[in-house]
Image 1: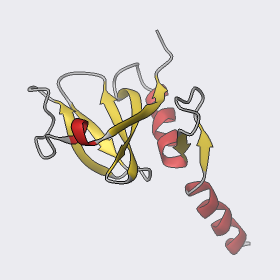
Image 2: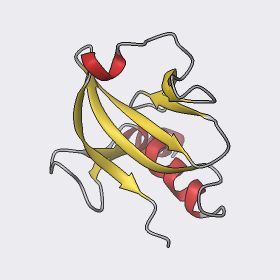
Image 3: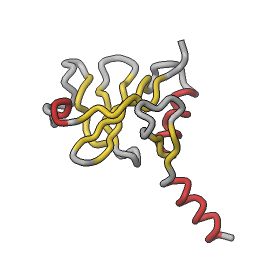
Image 4: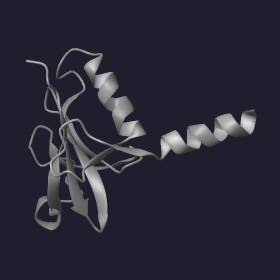
Length: 118
């Protein structure tokens, strides 16, 4: 029984499903991103993040989380929700300054999720 539960957990962790309003249709949401979206929806709008965009960067799909408030850095994460760096946001708008060419090097792939609440 333990092995079956473990196998199901691993499959769910690495599965990918289509976003509710994907742009383009190939954009998908991993289970960890979906958990973060669910968490954002359980909080007041903008208290965590209000939008996720997908980019292709260095041959991989990465996700830019736009923070909702207060001069916070916009976080770039991989498909496993691992923080990579912050290319924008903050007081200066330039993020953490570690990858100033991100937007010129990356290719926009589409909007993954945007908070539907008004």
